[in-house]
Length: 235
Image 1 (cartoon, one colour):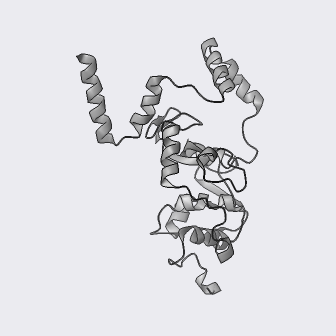
Image 2: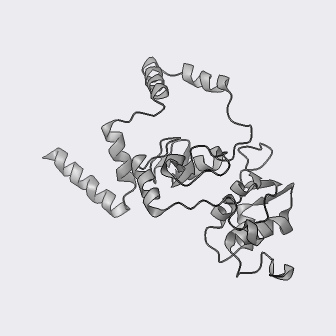
């Protein structure tokens, strides 16, 4: 393939390659951009935002306002370009294949809830009204090079936690900041937290476990189930 074909405008190229070429040619290292600008450039392609995130395991450093405070919420910063995924020998760089069976197993194992913040599919964030959780799969150790697509390496995350945790670059909260929040908990909350720490797992009540399963159902089925429960309690 000639250099003239290696253009982000070439619709015959894969979306991840087009995104990488656009970042290379239109943004450059040290440049800022927005998702809206990226989507406008790569029109007609599916999951442009995800294909951009897929560049990170290939060494591309793309920061958000969460890890670079000088950015606006709608801005991203291309700190460094990674491997040239437009070259044949780098096409699969950073990509991990996760089978449908493994994906289903991990979601069911994690009770269809984000293992980091606890939100269920479609549930509204308490600190961000109007924004709802969307579940995806992340890696237990997002910074581990070459992490596999096996169930033991995967964790259910909401898209917000996946974006934040997977690409932290030294801005994660200090121990003292977390401790201030621990100290503010009532004694019952402190005991629960210690139990989760010792087990390295948040213990859920039976109702919470069912809640996660309920939230992943289509809206029509959720409503039917709600009516069934309402009728059961009235009988």
